[in-house]
Image 1 (spheres, rainbow, N blue to C red):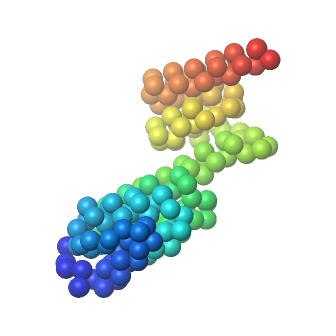
Image 2: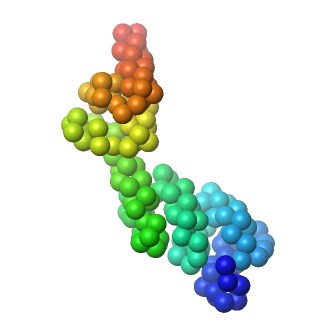
Length: 173
């Protein structure tokens, strides 16, 4: 990486983030130090604006992507899209896919119940999304779909176990 003096936006963003997390900035050229600051910033909602500026200035695309993906689960849908937009287009795809997957998971907890997912939809989901849905869903239709057509044995077993647990709890009532 270039010296931070050659990247004033990055140096300023790292200093701002360090102040927001009450730590010394250290060497802004050290990507390991930046990663530590990014992790600390992720834990503090008050540091999020500074963290966003640091992500936008981050010269290592894979590091910026890792930070955004780390932040996505705790972000609301609009913030997820703003975070993904901070990334260079060369590394945006994975983060965008993860944001979409998280939006699907969000629907599993809607008060009116999840939408009726079709088998054609569910089989296109990533292993990550199928596993999370098998763990988080209370919808017997979705769990049955995953138990029957999940991509891996682990997913099918997990969905079947979640379904059995729901049946057990229902019978106890």
